[in-house]
Length: 114
Image (cartoon, rainbow, N blue to C red; front, side, top):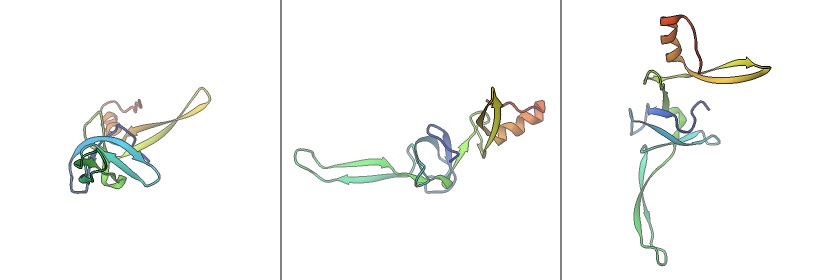
């Protein structure tokens, strides 16, 4: 999955369309993400013993296909790419924004991956 916890994403389809927020949790087995203040539902908790009944607002997970990553450099929604770099005999996989690389190529003709 290309989206990780604490990434900034934008909802591209759902009732909270065009909302930007952080990912709180990623569920890889069900292919869903929990996004802060997106898909908020109201739960009515029944009274049990000494605990009073209450109404609680909470976020529910949405499918990862309904969100898109926001590039931290350009602040635009973007697709994510991976590149493998070999350093000291080990291969490392870096994640980068394709929009940031295109804009950097226009200016310097070089690709810098952080």
